[in-house]
Length: 248
Image (cartoon, rainbow, N blue to C red; front, side, top):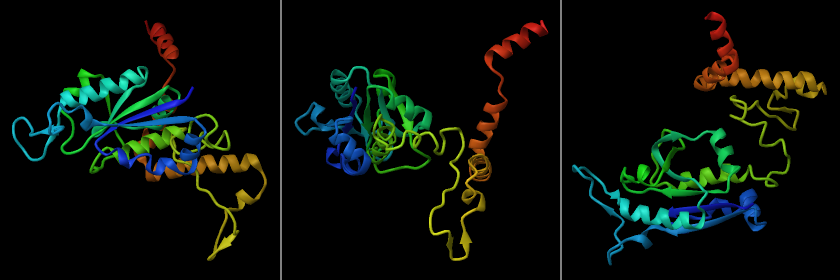
């Protein structure tokens, strides 16, 4: 099954961009994923091909029209009915590696890229559009965020990465940041590779890497560490039910 990406955008010339080189570019050439870019302006209903209008209630900027967006989404869904529709917006739910894995395991994705002040809110419930954010930042449009999302998905497709374990031993996969890496030279400007990594003892190396992941996550991303700790102490649903029955 080929992962099919459809990007709805006012700037289709921005694609494939970085996705046309390296792992993603090679995977596309090999048919592991496909890309269609759809010009939102093609679905405008007036001779000026207008896609936006002034905000209801007043205010600065312009807002993408819901009727134009809906027509573009309907067109994309006609090509890939099973793919989820995702709008890249800072108001969305933060993108996680777990969600990326879910998307990569599916038939593809339809990505709606915003511009101006964003989308008419009615498009989200009206077309079952998922709102996704790539961080607490504001970009000039959704296209860079869409490229980020697609890159994250494509690298997880079967056969894209060289080593099968490459995608599993990375930041966020186990709820932690990835451990630090080193390579030759052994000494550089007075700094040396940790001795344990030169020991050849795989058990000690694994333990060191796990410890470093925990230390770095705790110090750099306390929010991740808190979620990781909560997940470790959370009892299974069956255990909770059993305890509740015993208490009764």
